[in-house]
Image 1 (cartoon, one colour):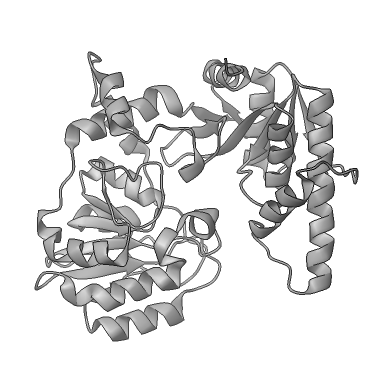
Image 2 (tube, rainbow, N blue to C red):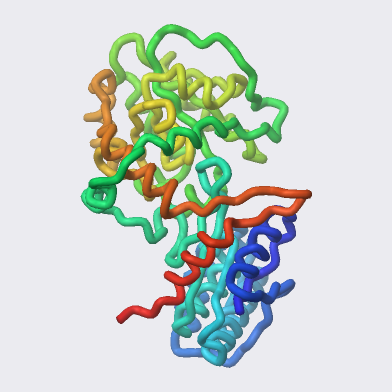
Length: 374
């Protein structure tokens, strides 16, 4: 049986249920049960999950209450999966707070796990036994993708997925997806992310957060070649604006940072000379436009050859004067994207208002998750 915490979003919940169907049956947990009989690891697991919670408690009392909640959820999960070792823990995201405690409990009990999330590729879902994003199970060695692709044909077929790329609808009146004529001067497109998203809170690396990222760009914008600028757009789903950090960055950069919240995201990618991001999915999606990419944060696709990883401010200082010559390995991109297309991301589709995951692909991934190490 597959156990998963309920999601109060119709699309997410139906996708979770669909994986449960592929696994032969599931139990939807409307509320995660609690147990207060601790394990030796309970305190440390609770601390980690609490520190990763998206909404951090605002005072000592609320922190203590949330700590008790996460502690009870971890204990229950571990106790359940210890008693039911063939059950599988499935979770949407599962990298923070209560969901992390649920997945940690399953892991410490030796149970199989599946982490689930929307994919950056259209019509696909992430379903990974190890984690998501920078903590996913995807290999980090480019040679492995080259070896996998050797002898395979049609390594450009992944490009068909690009036909389904559309920019996210804006949730704010000051961020749009309009068509517009973009300037002829060269620029790096800088797509910002949702400030509280786990991609930023967990994997932003040396820039720390989005204001830190913008400050680093502003300090070093003068190193861009003459006539170049950073063209920055806020995330269309961000509920709060980064207006103050953006205003400060524009002032410091003295004309080398331009804010364009109005123009369609992928129109800006197409018109750019490259993309610079912390670890936005737009960095991966820029592959469809044959654009070089620089990434300052941790991401499963931030591999040398696919993109240019920028691992420190010194690295940024060295890279910016040379952006006119920024490039990438096209053969490696073909191998990597073909692997994502054919192996890693299962298909997902909607019919009559219900979303479902490709059952054969889900069963294959579930089989790998259940396979115990030798």
